[in-house]
Amino acid sequence: MNNAIKHIQQERKKYAKDWCVDAKKFSEDKDYEWMENVIKSYKTVIEVGCGDGSSTLELCNAGHNVISIDENIECLKLTKNKLEQAGYIVSLIKRESLLILNEKRYKVNYSKIDDKLYGNSILLIEGDIIEDSKLLQWLKNNRPYDAIVCWLIGTHGYRIYNDIISDRKIKTPGDYRLIVQNRIYEIADELLRVNGVLQIVDRGETPDKASIKEDFIEGHKEQASVTSLIVNSLAYRNYDNNIDNGTKMNITIGNKMEVPNKLPNGSLISVISVKP
Image 1 (tube, rainbow, N blue to C red):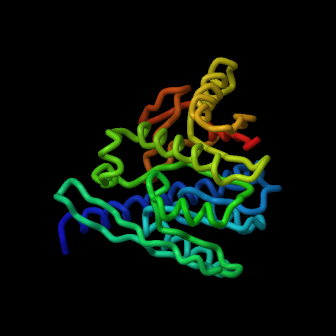
Image 2 (cartoon, rainbow, N blue to C red):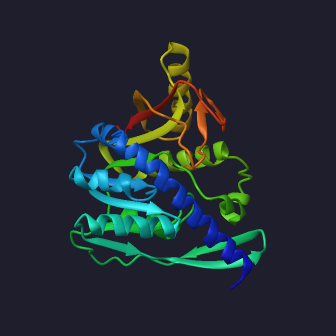
């Protein structure tokens, strides 16, 4: 096996394993329940990033029709297993073909998604929300959608060598978070129905002061400025941010991104934007 492919597989597995630790805590503390409650009345949901499937399971248990997208096949496999154990019918659409350019650069080609109907199954799609024209076309063909959610986005360490990432000069978790969220705002503008919503949840500094809250809102307004979406509301919930052996994710400090070892006074922050 090519060493680069081995590294990609190892990093994906490590990320998926580490995320299981975070997800267990989020589930126990009913954090996913809190996130879902904000979009409870929206039926058809696109989830960007499935983690170990705990978030996807929360959406399914709440009665949403779910399409979940992730570039990490290890996360998708964990999600499929978790959902099937809960009794759901799941279709996992594998699309990736890896092209190794050198030890520190690789390219991913994604196959076309079949236009056939998948019945009542939950769809898990292997794809890259940043740049995947065939995925976007399939989503457009099946629009509109009621909601798009991006909860606590992150990725594995080897992803910086993906040509899509390296070409965009993405160096830090903060850079990655912003580029993904910017793209999701653009896609949401194309896919959501009128009055549909985009929900983005980050871990960050508790916005219990007007200045911090305004920073978050202004940051999202800037992201939404190239779209028709209107930033509508912000809600937050305190959480235990010091999870041993979990995934070290970027922390939002107002409009800035940092990855501190410990963050006092941390919260989960949900921002809702509406398609007019």
